[in-house]
Structure formats: structure tokens, C-alpha cells
Length: 256
Image (cartoon, rainbow, N blue to C red; front, side, top):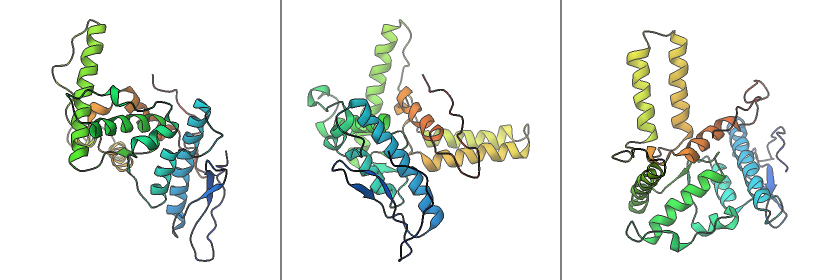
């Protein structure tokens, strides 16, 4: 798996165009990361992480040699352009190496149409298999319908689990979004905690809010089940170490 962190060098035109990973046809995949060195390094590191996840999927299902999956390459080609949030690919792209074929019989026609359920399914699979990518639903009517369906499905799942555990299910699905929760936490730090902690602690916590909002899409809280939380966790704990700092040398245990 060729993802060594080598020094980036520009081509004669001043662009950084490294080879990262191997395609299904056995050829190396080249990316154009632009002409800004710092930004090119950031994009390179993100793409290398996506490739590591792609190879892990190949190895897990054993269908092909270590290479780019279609879904991972879809994300990497957008990351090379500077995208921080990646639109989910179509179900057939996810199927290519997901190991979990999309089946129209899995969805309940009383909830939504085929397209809406396919979006929810694709978001769930890609988020689980490629946690370093910030997958987002389209900001249109179909995407909004998928978000609402996700909330309904979460509520149904929560009630089913509550019956199995003989526990009380929540009366309503979890409301709000991830960014709204972060904004509320930021206000809490500013208004309630600031008087009780050192200024450096306040700045540190507010910086964490800023980075979380920068690196993660505004997902409905109803989508943040255990797999969703693992995706957030893995995004930060699987980052490659920086040469100038000891970041991520010791990976904490996996969420369970």
C-alpha cells in the first residue's frame, strides 16, 4: 500500500501532482493538489487516509487486490479539488466494494420512494466504511426527504431496541443537528464556563468546536448512532502523525 509520507515536489508548472494508491486496473492514480504547498499536503494526507480505508475494505471482503474502491476514489477526486464535504455516490458505486448489496426489498414503501431510501442506505454504508470522509446528502428536496426518513428509521430502531431490552423508548426522535449542538456548547463555554476556567482552556474548547464544525458535515443528531460516533472518532484518531508534533502517535481504544 503506497501511502508513504514523502516530500511533495512541484512539477514544472508549479503544481503538486503525486501518485497515491492503485486503481483496479493496476495503474497508479495521480492527483492534482494545486500549487499551494501547505494545502497540497493537507489534501494529500486526507487522500492517503481514504486510500488506507479503501484497502481495508478490499482486504476485509477479499474480492480484489489492494486498490481504490469506486466510492473511495469518488471521494478522493473531490478532496483533491478542496472539497471538505463529499456528496454521497449512487448506490451502484457503493455496491462495488461495500460487501452489502443494496436490495430494493429492504425498504418500506410506506416511508418513502426508492430514491430516498437509497440515499439513506448509501450514507450509512459510506460513513461506516470510509469514516475519514465527511459524506453529505444533497441540499435539495430529495436530500431533505432522506434526512427526514433517517429520523423516522432511527425512531423505529430505537423503539425496537427498547422493546427487546424492556426499556422505555424516547417519545420523539432526537431533534436538532450536530452543528446546532456544537453552537449550543460554544455558547455554554462563553457564558457559563468562561468564569470558572483559565482563558487558555476557554480558547482551547472553542477551537475544538471550530475544528469539529470545519471537518464534519451538519448531520442530524438522529443519525449519530454508534456507527456515526465511530466515524467522528476515527476521523481524528486515525490521522497520520505530523513530523513536527507527536500528534496521534498513541491511538486510543475503538468505541464500542
